[in-house]
Image (cartoon, rainbow, N blue to C red; front, side, top):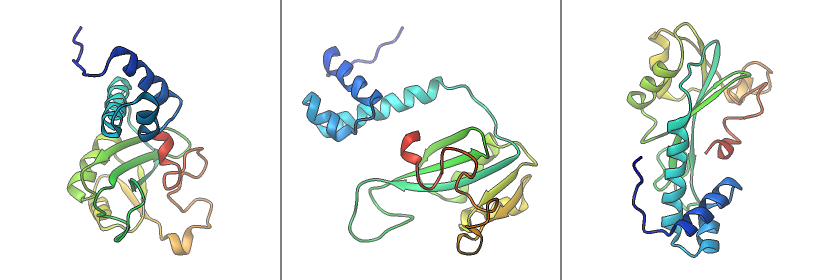
Length: 177
């Protein structure tokens, strides 16, 4: 069995794992354990990657919602897509079912479409917002429905916020990361 070398003692690694499990932030864990905040953040990222690598692969079918979001600390200046220093996360949700998330470099069509093709079965209904990266879904093997948040958000079926599922894509992504 390959074991990665680490400068952290097994004791500190164990403490970081315990804090990861209880949901502590990397910054709080760093202060408690006595390591640099970047060290704790990298350790938490590697734990997430390890967990993700052990999850079984599955496909989503039927009604699937697609959305992207950005995470990071409060920043001054520009907000929304393309903000420097934030992590872009793309998610797919089978209504009433499983969720798939991926950290992405950008929210371009070239990045999103391969993920959708890999994880969503053809002929599924894919709900998205009006973001231009989803235009390719209009001429794909999927049935594409765009949701206008300002007009249809109150309608029980026409939105992309995880209706009927305890996880809401736009609001509770942190529980998945």
